Image (cartoon, rainbow, N blue to C red; front, side):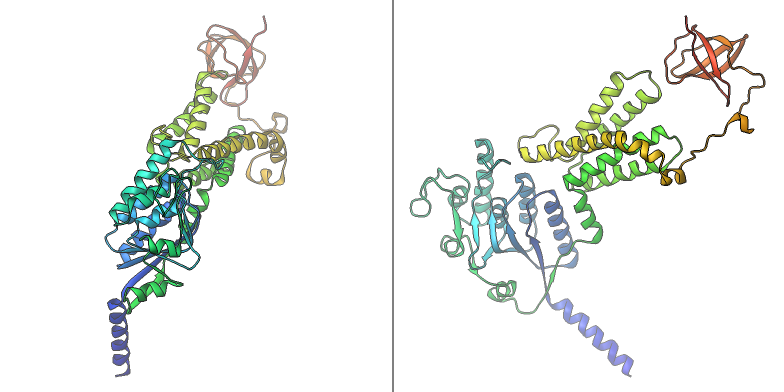
Length: 442
């Protein structure tokens, strides 16, 4: 009987919770960038899955990237249920645009909204084409939600004269009281609960959206500084793997770093398929130059160029080399992160290369002992002694191929030199299954 009562109480509790209106709170309290865009996308997906009837954005930001803000605006305006914003301090620039996209705006005492002029990394105003684009977005967004579009434009352009509201020469930044007076705020509140009370929402379940542990890690790797470190590991790992064939650890480190570099940008929509393919094409060309072609020429230079360009582009929200609305600050950060990672990798090779190969850790993961013929070790499959013998190259050696010695064909390789066909060579080592040869001095 007690068990039946307990079951009925649980069912009643679940039923009561299900009947409550679900209200989800999400926060925009950082700079508007790709990480914030991904956060908003995931929050809206979560709201959809959990059946949230109302979303409240708690806002405190000085703005950020225009492209990311525009995509956030589009996502909010296409969401089927009401989205309200609580400006709990500042909604400047891109923050103002996102706020205007919401169905209702509420502000705390002392909060502000406006100052949406597009600026460059130096703090100076961006060229007029950026201001024009921002004005059009602000105007259309305000119109869609029944707000005065002229005021929205005046938040961007100081040349617009709105009589007593805003004289020409300064952009609009409203206080809470001013925003209420001119229709850019539905009310002054101190808490989210007050917003719900003003809208007669009484029986509700309020919860905050939190990123999962995995998403928090992904967000960390979207930082250009972290990307630079990953590029360093990729470059150094590839180099050490080529210097010590079979070690495995350096190659694995490079592979893991490459995955950690690509996946966050791909999931966030920054890394396009063609950019990733360009990166791998560069790696393949570099490998061909090292292992197949002699010297260092067109393939190697092209491979390195493709790798550098693709790594920079992966971090930028460009539309196939269209950087019209990509802030110069982002371009500089992406370039600095890539070049810094490459420079750091090269420095690590010169400074740490010799120390790594002589370290105790290296001796644990790689074979460092030399097995000499004098100690009884041999892997030669050639029956007679060949060292010192002279013959001709039967094929081109680049660096491996075949040689003819005493009317017999042998597999052969050089120390990395390129030797043409029908050139006199001398055997300098006959260990293993191939002969090591060098060009015979004339």
